[in-house]
Image (cartoon, rainbow, N blue to C red; front, side, top):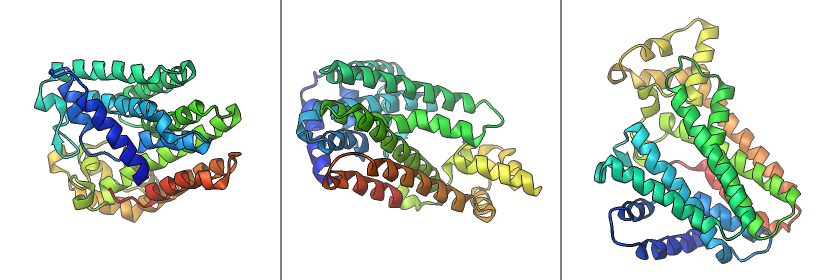
Amino acid sequence: MEQLRKLIEERIEQWCDALPQSDLYAPMAYLMRLPGKRIRPAAVLMGADLFGADPRSVLDEALGIELFHNFTLMHDDIMDAAPLRRGKATVHVKWNTNTAILSGDAMLVKAYQLMGRDARVAQLFSRYALEVCEGQELDMAFEQRATVSLAEYTEMIRLKTAVLLSCALQVGAQCANAPAEDMERLGSVGEHLGLAFQLRDDLLDAFGDPQLVGKQQGGDLRAGKKTWLLIRGLELEATQGSTLLRDQLARPAESRDVPLMIGTLEALGVRTEAEAEVARHDALALAALDHLAVPEERKAPLRQLAAQLMVRVY
């Protein structure tokens, strides 16, 4: 991962340095230069390497995936009225909302320019890019609904988060001319890793170390955000005749007793269930990886990525 991340950071810096000097492009460079895990572009390189291609041959596609991901973040931050991104001012705060909208639009165009070298890649990317937008629409719709099921939430995070990781792996594999059946299996690897990644995020928000996670503990609970943890907690409460979580959600956000809510989730066994769900998706990803018809040594980076995602603390 570190070797791949170094290649990606060098390509990002080269791309940022070549941008014209204007308020249309400055927000792109600002956002792209913020510290990031670079999991999605690394997945493009891994997908190519898995089928025998030089990872450096797909750096443009890796950059395109990262540009698209950051485009969604730029616009999501506007929708969420978020003041911070990775500990720094969001683009619409540092500049203004109109600039952030327009710069995000241009960022999407830049992503498509990079994904257009191969018509098969462009088609693949377009399919999943649209699904990410569908996932964001579901996320916004859930904010207006009183109840959301676990199945609905899982489908939302599959679209909003998991499919882009699946796309990244398949883009790399497509550039390496991988067989269709292996592309499908690799897509499953990415999807399950993406689901495990988002569920781990939910766990870290409630149970992670705030110093490591970089944000206030229980922020999702304070906001009443319908995460896997809260949805399952409310389900279990209903079966047991308890109302602790519901009582807290009835209060204004600033008055909610977040430590009590976290303790209630722990007592209900929600944390244990969520950790088991993360492990289940991780196992499904590795099972799909096992069935890929490539030498085992080429699978090692993906196995390393899966292991890192399972134990990450931020």
